[in-house]
Length: 124
Image (cartoon, rainbow, N blue to C red; front, side, top):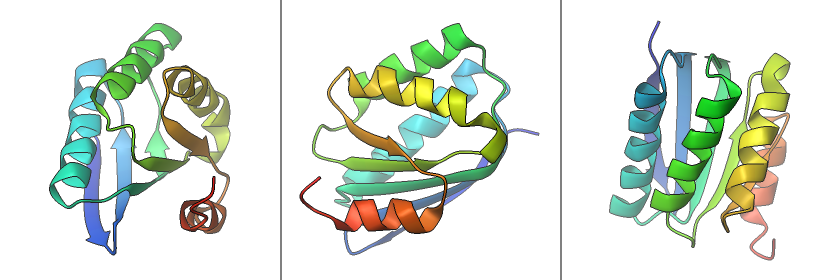
C-alpha cells in the first residue's frame, strides 16, 4: 500500500499523519516534497510527522538519498519532529543523522507527546 497522508496547519505547526508503505524512493520524495510545500505555503516553522503506522521499506542507500533530498529542499528555519514506527527506529535515526549533518533541526521521538514538547521549546 502506498503512502497516504493528511496534513493540518495550526499556529505555525504542520501536523502530518502518514500511513502505508514507502514502496519507492520516488514515492517518499514526493511525500517529503508535499510536506515541505505545505509547511512553506502555510508559514509553518514546526513540523510533526507521525509515521507510527507506516512501514519503512527503503534500503540504506535510498534512505541516504532521501535524507540528502530532504536537506536540500527543506527550509533551514523549520524544526521537524518525526515519530517513526516502533520497530524501525534505527532506519529513522540513520535518516536523522544524515539530515542533521546537513544543517536541519530534526529529531526522532518515541511518542507524539515528546515530539510536541520539543517542538514547543523554542530554544532547542
